Image 1 (cartoon, protein in one colour):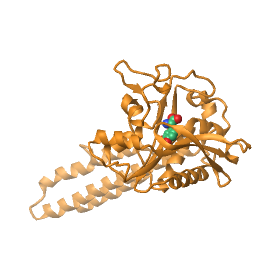
Image 2: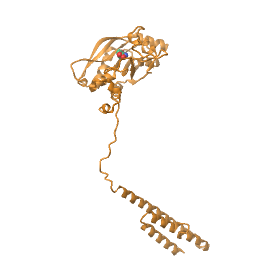
Image 3: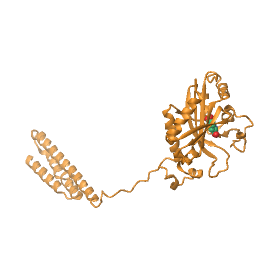
Image 4: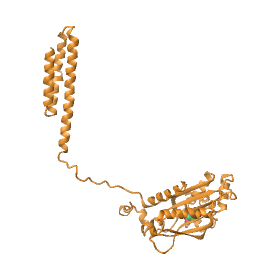
Length: 338
Ligand code: DAH
């Protein structure tokens, strides 16, 4: 019996090894391990063995079955590997691949991200507020009188319930101060809306970035230093920054920031790029009233604010002459900003 089993094993392993394809391998499996295969028949024969022989032969039988099964598995894996290699034989893996077209961030988003990074380095954090606002947050709290032209229905989108689409991101100043005590050091990028006729330099929805810094003893020097640093980081060390007295209802004194820089086309003309100023005490007072405390006591604290349009800045920096290109989603235009 033992030698018979050894013979079966030797034959089976030789046959499996020689199997040229999966069909031959399957035939070998049936021949040895199938219902009436030789290994199966041998195990039937166990019945006739004596008590002493059974364990020894049983053990050998198991070993034979295991080695046949193992041989079948490894031959199968080898045949599969051969087939895969053959399938790749005609393919030149050194040929260049088909490039994947990778998208890019929108130019306004890119500029916004750069601006955020620069302000972050000065300790500013992001803040936001809703696009649909109350008249209070958009005008009253910002010290804008009831008869101010910006509040006109011709200039502002009003909703039926009296709310409106914010006309500037300065609302974020109020939202922030309502919800937290000083010190405040935030930037608030976001959309703003005005009922402008759409043309090469106007959209009804555009993008601004607001800034607010409130603490004890904040001065115009801090305002100038911060804005100068920002524009020179953004536009290069050759940028020249000028503060020109102006008027905004929510700051006193107020300034417009004019810039000359190679990155802006390099002309000799000063370009008006931002508004800023020292937060008007009246703004702090209306925030205090809403908060029900005097966290923003104008006798104790002071602050500066600024705001600028991202679209116009992006246009000048990249030489785009029609603002509408930014919203038309034309890949030929967008793919130039990578
Ligand atoms: N909100 C102004 C605008 O939309 C820009 C502005 C000016 C923002 C002065 C400010 C500021 O924070 O202090 O034209």
